[in-house]
Length: 352
Image (tube, rainbow, N blue to C red; front, side, top):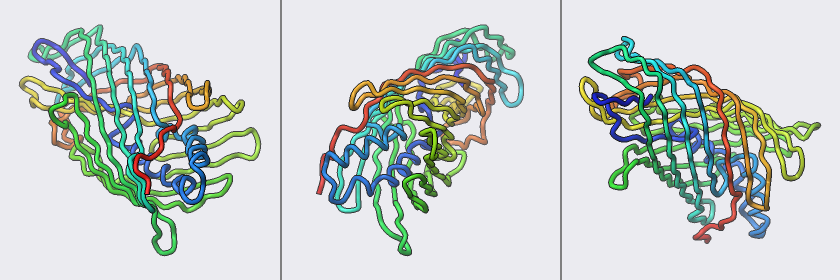
């Protein structure tokens, strides 16, 4: 939800890309743990990197780096202030995001990684109909930029003679270099119950320390299955995605399914609103995609389909999402995404 007018300005913004809070981080830790034992032990460095690259083809969050662009057009949005109509408009949204993962250290059963992200979002607001003369909303173009940093720790261990993965992380987001605008800490545990040549299943439970989170405890389930015919794989990673993926050739893949995502923005508002506010949007994308390995480490991708807004709220910074004062709706619109990503190529900086 982004609003701009002479009396209701957006001073600054900050957004997540393809996430609601830090859900993809949870899956990075869960899925990363599932493959941790394949990149340890007595294998050579080249074998470890080959295994990690194979995993990163199926789990994009394990890739070394990625750049992508989302384009959504023609979305009709409406907004209510304390239950009363505020405005309606048509929007066109363009998101350009980048992410870089860096393996920092590995010793024994422990590892430390870092991730840096960048997002620029442009929202064109047009055909605005403003309903409250005290809070006029007009046609506008809104640009926001976000820089994010995540440091995470993982330990592979056993509990009651069963392998477990413990993890902890800190995430900071900002739209300026002088301070962190949102900080989140996370503690979690994941347990792989099944791992065969054709099936894997793991369950995790995570606690998030984030005042704006709708819930502080998130259970996650990661399920993968390779079908016997058709070279088709199923990825059911709840609550993040359900995807069917088919390998067409050694260098190409098609996929179909649904993914959960969202965005957050910091807003500086005038009266009668709180000066420091947060806009939070949750969306689900139903899409088809294609990826092609153009070289040993570079993947090009395109996907498209329909993007549906599940929720859109504005609330005072520091408050819970349930204490919102603006609620919006956005319907379903077509979208397209273009991406280039890089399979893992950097070794751990510190390895003992």
